[in-house]
Amino acid sequence: MVKTEESSELIQSKLTKSELGLLLVLALVQFTHIIDFMIVMPLGAQFMTIFDITPKQFSWIVSSYSATAFLAGFLSALFIDRFDRKYALLVLYLGFILGTFACSQASSYGFFLLARMLTGAFGGVLAALILSIVGDVIPFSRRGRAMSVIMTAFSAASVIGVPLGLYLAAQFNWKMPFLATAVFSGIVGILIFFVVPSMKKHLQEKQNREHPFFVVAKIAQNSNQLQALLFNVVLMLGHFTIIPFIAPYMQLNIGFSDFQITYVYLIGGLLTVFVLPVFGRLSDKFGHARVFAFASLGAVFSIFAITNLPPVSIPLALLVTSSFFVVASGRNVPALTLITSVVRPENRGSFLSVRSSINEAALALSTIIAGSIVTEGEGGALQNYPLVGYIAMAMSLLAIVLARRIQTIN
Image (cartoon, rainbow, N blue to C red; front, side):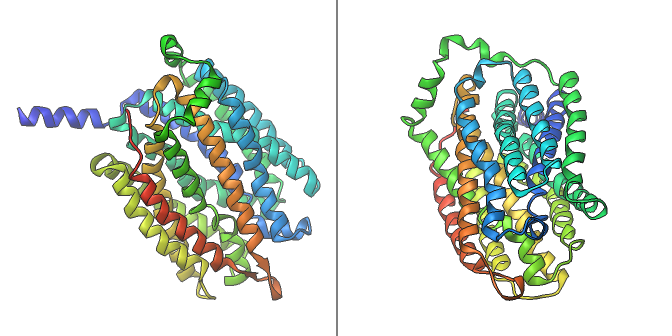
């Protein structure tokens, strides 16, 4: 009897073939979305030179994407649960492709800034929709593993997308990575049309469905959902404040060349390919809040090491940056699982759109904070980066406390 129960639990914990197929397509969507977002940061030193801008102006390139994603997220929360998930995914992805293509045609700082805003308006909502689909389709018992599959898109983008993008930028110009991403995204869009099934189950829950304005308003009255949103904001402040300037810091302060900076993403991303599934299994087995706490403690040490790193050898610097990739990405697996599990399916899209909007606002705030603190010193080296690190460390510790207060309902 015990063996039978154990076998049943093992089967229930594994992703089915249909689930895995859907997750792989969603991971490709996430892959292109992450490349588009990430490629801006390792090109930061080039943008500051080509456009003749300051670190603060560069931070606006990053935060402009998040600012429009913030606004689009709130607007989409009012109606996104009214549509077939597949139809919504296709429309948003088309807008993302057009925005990315516009980035490849930019000829000035102002035009590029506007193109990033357009891309963010669609790309930010895409991330929320992907989480909604995972939450609708994958049972809670397998959701940690499902999230790890989606999160491997970050690893793939780091291992393949960003290095390839930087290679194209070196061989041609900075516009080529955006053009290549737009073309590849068109292929992924065709896959969505033919592979992703129609998803209307959430539309059948009409007896439980409320007007979108009431759904959004009720989030403010639900302490558990507010806890999840606050947790998300704090996590972003403990994560993204240091990220935009990792690549410029490694180049301007440590001595990485334009080519060597690809190693940061290649090695860090390759490690997360193997580590993220482990975090998914550990989260399902030992509890998401507990695994998040251990990973966040590791992230605190990595953040301190990166932001206080003196001029050292390239291998030692890569060891430090890779440690951050592993623990920072790993803690996002249980974090996202907790956040997607505080709301019922019929309202999950609206909640996660609000979550995405709040997330993008926190991301923009993180970038603006970092851009306001980090300055350019003599010889072009960046200054005050350690102060940004201390802020991120404090927020990471606070996120551990908040994670333990979140209650999952499914």
